[in-house]
Length: 141
Image 1 (tube, rainbow, N blue to C red):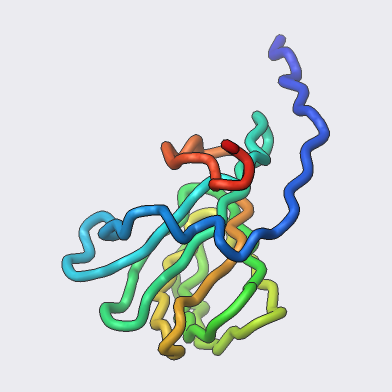
Image 2 (cartoon, rainbow, N blue to C red):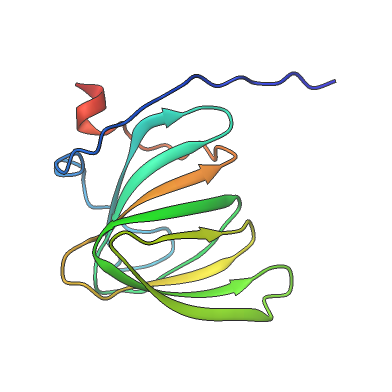
């Protein structure tokens, strides 16, 4: 019988400068892409919450190995999606500040940043994929 892995109550207060010192990275397998990411300190067995900036330029394709919910903090992005299991259902949507969207496990997406400013969003992943990214500046002190 599996034991339940209990998480702890966690809180984060948005700090606009939290990604300012994080290095630009290249998305895996997407030459010329740029993004920044950091964990906001909500990191338990059930969920990992990160804050990310994607930049205008190269489209970013990705296939999700877990469920994700994104809440847009700033910027604008077009998202093309193809839904599992057969990827026959698809669509395209433009998201901007204040929007929230859900991507199920197995979903294939392509992000195309439309704004000149970074497309910043909370990335809520469940179950926790254990992405190896640093804590945001305000949490690590």
